[in-house]
Image 1 (tube, rainbow, N blue to C red):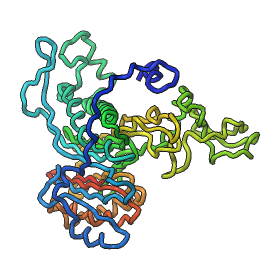
Image 2: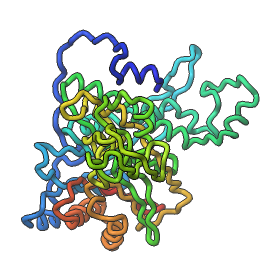
Image 3: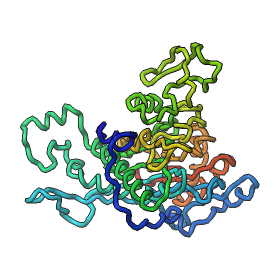
Image 4: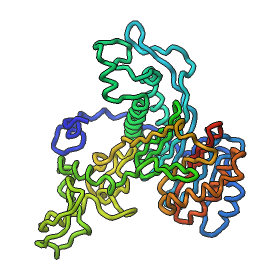
Length: 448
C-alpha cells in the first residue's frame, strides 16, 4: 500500500474520500454451519463421551458424506461464549480453467471444462460475531480460483514466462526469470496472497453494507500439481505428523510474534495511537512509582533489551500488553493477522485496529511427490482452541494411536476425531477437521 493511501484511509487530519450516498442496507449475513455438516449428528463415540457434565456436543459429517481425500472433520459446539458458533470451515475441489490472450489482448476462456484441478480446505476462527467467518468460508475459495486462473498459463509452463501473453520483448527475459529463481509454486503463493487480500476487501464491504462487525483468522491448505500449500493468517496451526517426525507447516501470528512489525508501524505513524498508547514494550505495566527510574524496555528496532529512564509518556497503556494467550493488541485483539475487523475500534475511542492487522498469509510449500507420503502420514490443521490445550507431540500421539485399524473407512477420521477432541478437556473451544487422502501415495490428514 502507498503511504498516501494509508494516510487518507487511517490517519486523522488528512482529507478523506467523499462519503458514498446512502443506499438501502443489505440483509445481515445469515448464520450457517459448514455445508458438509448438513444432516450431521454426534458420532456414537462422541455422543457417549459428551454425556459427561463437563463436555459439549461434537459434530462431524454424516456417514456417506465424503470429504476430499477421504477427509474427516469434527467440531466442538460453542462454549456459550456467544449466541452462535463463530468458527467456520470449507473444503472442496478447485477447478481452474485455462485462458489465453485473444487477438484483442483480452482474456478468453478456451473451454468451459477445468484445465487444472486441485483440492482446498480452510478453517476460519471467528471473533466479534460469526459474519466474517461465514463470508470467508463462502468467498475465499472463489477468490483463489480467480487468482489461479489469471496465472494458469504460467503454472503449466516449464518456467513462468516474463510475459504471460507469450511476447518476448527482451531476448534475455528467460534468463532474468531464472536468476530471480521464480518457479510455478511462486505463482500459487502469489495467488494465495492476493486471494486473501481480495477476500478481506469483500468482507469489509459486505459487513459495512449489512451493518455487521467481526473478523476471523484463516488457515488454508491447497493441493495442486503434486504440492500442498498451507497459508496461515492468524493463530491457527498446521503440522505434518509422520511415523518418526512432526513437521510444523505454519507459524502463529499474534501481537507477540509480530511485535517489531507493529511497533514499527506505530513509529512511522504515531497518529495511529492517538496519544493514548505507548509503542514501547516493558516487562510489566509501569506505575507512577517507576517515574525517573531506569527500567528494561525495547522498541521496534530491537530484538534484545536495554534500559531507559521512565518519563510520563511511558505510563500510557502499552501498544502490546500481556504475555502468551493473554497478549493483546491495543488491549483488544489477540491476533495480528486475519480477515475482517474493518470496523473494530478500541473501547470508548475512535482508535482503529485495522491498520495494525495484515490479511496477507504466510505460505508454506510441501512437496508431496518428494516426501513419498505413507499411509499413516497425516496433516493436522486446527484452530487455537486445540493448540491451547494440546501440544504438537500430544496431537501426534493421538493421530498415531488412532490410525492403525481405522484406515479403510473414510468416515473413521471424522468419527475418531469426534471422540479424541473431547479428550482435550472442557477448555478446548474449537472446531476440528480431519481430512485424509487414500491413494497410492498414502494418507494425508487435516484436523481442525
